[in-house]
Amino acid sequence: MSARFAPLALVAALAAQDAPPPPAGYEPALWTKAWRLHHDAIVVDTHSDTTSRILDEGFDIGPRASDGHVDLPRIAEAGLDAEFYAIYVAANYYGHEDFTSKETQKASLANGSAHRALAMIDGLMLTVAKNHDRMQFCRSVADLRSAVAQGKHAALMGIEGGHAIEGDLRLLREFFRAGVRYMTLTHTNHNEFADSCAEAQPQWGGLNQLGEKVVKEMNRLGMMVDVSHVADATFWHVLRVTRAPLICSHSSCRALCGHPRNVTDDMLRAMAENGGVVMINYNCGFLDDDYGKLSAAYRSQLEIRRQAIDKTFPPASPEREAALADLKQKLQPPPPPDLERLIAHLMHAIEVAGVDHVGLGSDFDGVPCVPKGLDDVAGLPRITYWLLQRGVAEDGVRKVLGENLLRVFAAVEATSRRLAGETPFMNDPAHDSLPATDARASSK
Image (cartoon, rainbow, N blue to C red; front, side, top):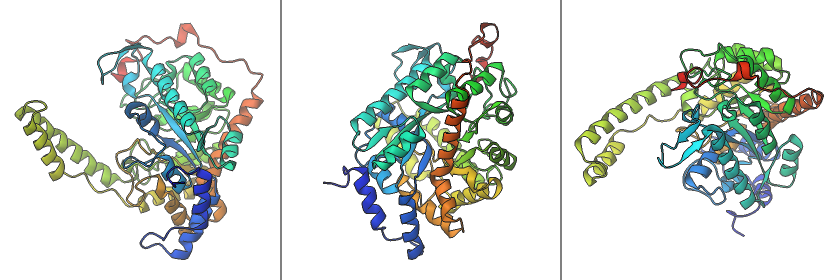
């Protein structure tokens, strides 16, 4: 049987027995120890955008791919036991009750945000069914641990972009019934109930009345509340409202990189007090300020020169294609920061929040750049090596790799059981109805 298509249990067992040669500069004995620890631990990643590739590109996760970050063979090599696949709804779907696809210009789609989320869910479900010998769809901590015990990759779902529920608490409940187990309250846009960190002017100053109900209903259901992407005011507002621990599914440390997507030290300490967990993002632009500046300058120059080419040559002409190819060769993006930069964020979060409140949220297949030395999911054991090398105890490494997230997930489930007799929260037509000319206008 080819290792490409071998059951994950077999591949993982072989990997755990025989660590590959250490990467250049890695101490062999520590590498072997890290490899074995990594493959013995339960490794959980809370954010991959591979779902977008599945839906938009027809990507097949089963065989080894020559591009991207994630597929099942590389997942097996990585010892990645569980992934929360992002049900990502882009900001341009927000507010479009009759959304016309910008890609095809063919289909008019009512309730575009919810339909996009449902299409993502369907794509993931079909993928799991196609690869049922190697994957299992999971809705709970018990499901996840059971899948891992069977040697299968546990696939879970988290909505990225709270506008997917279109301000409707009934849709929130339907997504939970479909298996969604966390929701990122915002993406790059303010929505019907919460402010994003990506828009300069606040809409609600955090959460509005509906937003408080969304958080409380998520608590009641047993859906983890994700505060990545939210405005600072939204973060603090959610902390005041929630009855369960929170997650940041894919955010890094603002003390080391000033991007507003990252969390401050005060936020790290607050997440620890809440009992939550911050999952560190691998995106180069969220890890290193210098890279962010160079990348912005590169994108600006690339756009200027592309526009000049478009003005000079007819569309789809051989001359235009040759000019674009020459531009791509001559204008190179900045080099990614080393893996050391990601390790620095992990260690900073551990030092500030404590080892019980830090985890991994890669953003694989959703970012243009990951650190050098962590080119794809197969590089995950290198993180374990460097955590051990920096003095994190084996028990602490296991927590960062996955047990912290599982603890929070279990606590959210326990909160739901405690709130089982609570009446479901409902929309108030007098206050929760938001006309497109009002709350949605700011995202245009």
